Image (tube, rainbow, N blue to C red; front, side):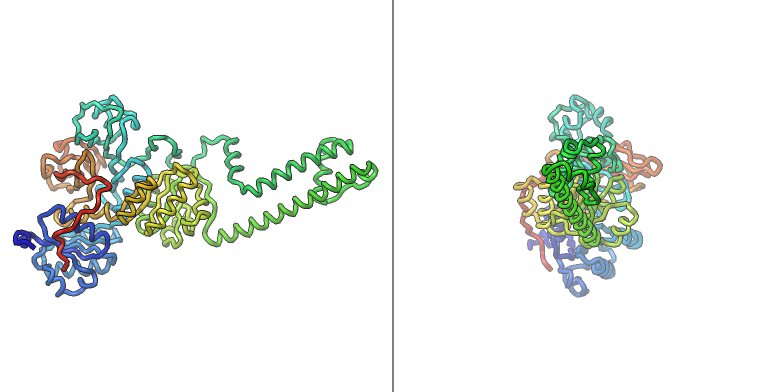
Length: 554
């Protein structure tokens, strides 16, 4: 360690997973601090914390996967250093708010709730690349950033001010121009980055069919279309049996009509009698010659065969349906619904956001938690208890008519398998996939063209920023630069830290979310959200992870 770095303030990180690693990279890239990493199992001892420099550290980030340990280490660090800033990773958002209210200079962030907003936002709007709740990360208004071409948004040849009014978005980038002026003219091929409430928007090719808010509307479907769809879903073997029975019945009907000189209703009745072996007027046939007798015998034998096959198929279907029901599976008939594969912490948080948006949600999880089970019993969601990597389970969700499929289990290979399975069922299905491993995510994007999001990549910038600056909520990239998203609470002033800050919106108790273009639009009591450029070019999405010099293991 150089002498210059020895005088830099120290930040302690307790953690050993990918999130802790990414936070280290973020802090090192920002510079100005020394980072000491403490394995979670060692952080349980005060002497280790003291050796790591807790007495002089400016902040400690407890980022292990154990909520209880994170809280315990944070409290002991505060006892050893009353002035240290505390940033905790907690999965439970309710206890997080209570900790913040009772422990000064502390911030609690749930990676699951924080990252779930982007997953849900990308499902609702394919252009959304970062979303959050504001001003409360647990129950605030759902807002985010979206990227699209001007031609896709139908705002070509408008000014920025006109487009903002039409879209109800704050346009923060026009091509490579950050925070364009209101009278700037928009060309059809300009890339637009907008900020505002997360809304449902169709992909640019318009292939995905979305339903209105409830997701269950069938108003656009004609009766003929519904019948054709129902026929297409029928098992092909059953479809062949039914078609054969209908053709056989038609031939027998014509035969009886001509051979016995009966009326059409009479012929239809006799054919049914013969085919079901419920009775037949043999004297009406025997005296009509050998051909008529043989024809009647064929009808009776054929009817017995078709009836036996039908009874066997129905019995098998009932048995299969009973077994499927016992496994917590059933076929979903829906349109414009959202399929969420994985009901863990991130999946459950994404389900909450989709439900609040009024969407019909289908959840697949092999071991659903009690909250999901309760919602399913209340008919608020459709819950399938199974493994989404199995095609027969995924096939129950009517992927062909889904608005989007969110793949959010904690297995990267499993998520890719599910995503490819959904794509095999429908080539243009919108996919939102969780991939944690960086190299795996890059390979997935390049080889399969699947956009992925990593919970650690979404939350690491927020944790790193919170170590020094309360109110940091994450980082976005647009106009060729990286921008930190910062929240400034009401009563803390109306001026941004620098003149480069781009105001996004404010929260006013009596008005809710209000989009703003200038800092002088802020009034006393507003809670402000703004983007602050970092002053360095943003790395390309496929850039490799930087080396980590200056990270000092304890």
